[in-house]
Image (tube, rainbow, N blue to C red):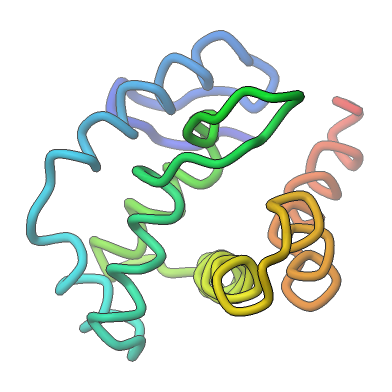
Length: 143
């Protein structure tokens, strides 16, 4: 399966190009100022919720491994979802799962004081974004 990125179609097993595209796209997203309103308009989520989600995914820093506090690593699938959400033309159900997962995860961390790992596990049980892509990769024999 191929995904169209800024540089054209990228095969799912071209991990180097996927990682490169994700890193570049995350930097572009961090500079955007209209995506929040566009995504809210295209999804029915509130502007406030999309702002929280964007901050959570692209800006906030968390203790993700050992003692290091940092941002999330860029993720190709999430970058592609974010672009579809902005464009509003080919939004897939899984893109909405991404928004629900990230908002729920953030709220668990903020309101219940859970660590990222704890919140991610609970959010994945309720809104499992990654499972969709793992299943695609499994079907394609990539994992």
